[in-house]
Length: 312
Image (cartoon, rainbow, N blue to C red; front, side, top):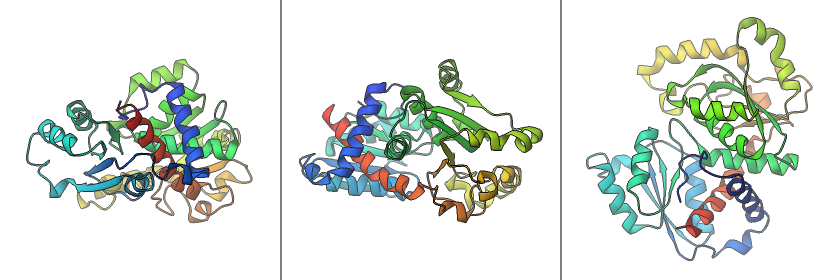
């Protein structure tokens, strides 16, 4: 059993993982030897803080061992991907892979003989979404019927929120004047729409001026993410596109004026660019659950590891 995307996971799979995450957080002492010395390899093409720490520290706190591989210091960049995944599978019990391209992650998982976790690719970020569901459950006491509004660029995180929400009854409304091309998943969007759990918002200027606040007023959670993927934010070759995108997206910034006195929770998967997709004051607002959301990546990663190792 892999976790490449949440699309094939059932409602039961997701709800059990959320429940397990909360149990692990509340009773960590019960899980100190849960994996019995199993080995996790973190194979990363992309930079990371939360996903790397969640994997390395998580497996260690469960009684296992972590081995970090920077793609650039291995032969993965030189050899056949499938060959290298078969080799790596012989050394470890589970692999947490953070790849640039979804297609390569699918190829890698197909060749692996141990479970593979998608630690982020250009189309999905399932471990983030599971941690987010845990955080919503923790703060709101429910998932069914929760209304989540994602404001920003439709990206990998947004896709995984839709996939997760569709299974557990979270209604996701997306306000996105931009879609990352790699994140286009019409099959996912159509299925979620048919179930009435995915809606898009008219992003014309008039609609934004008149109706965005009304959408927020009806939302239990307002969520945003970086407007420019981390690997491109400081890339000189992406500078022109970055400038265009930031100028276009400024009307969609989460700030105190937009949220006014609405009692919605504020979420961001981090790292945040203060003054761009979210104001610094809102990051630290009493409605913000951003740092609890970040912490919960550790506990939810432990639950994911336990689930996949139990099925390996």
